[in-house]
Length: 85
Image (cartoon, rainbow, N blue to C red; front, side, top):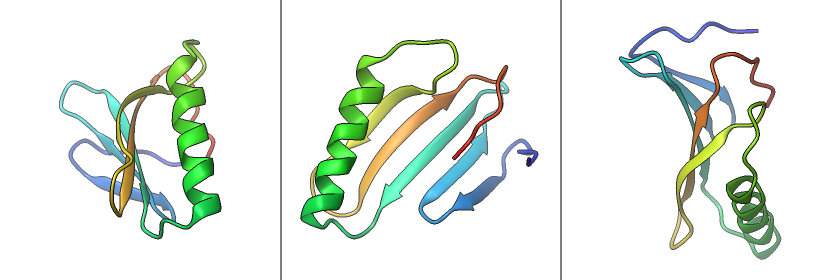
């Protein structure tokens, strides 16, 4: 388990960053540096799946960039639950 302090960016995994915003919201940024065909397909599938699901125990997809390299996905974390990556 980790604690995210306000205003600091924490790298929790390769290409996954967490930041606490001023209002207490926690955002998760997933960065995909190398865009290989299989990895790209998995990224698009993940974005489509999470983006279409709305559940209180899941992160909420705020935005993503699927053109060029690197690719990004930005999620809003529900502060009431632990984040497992």
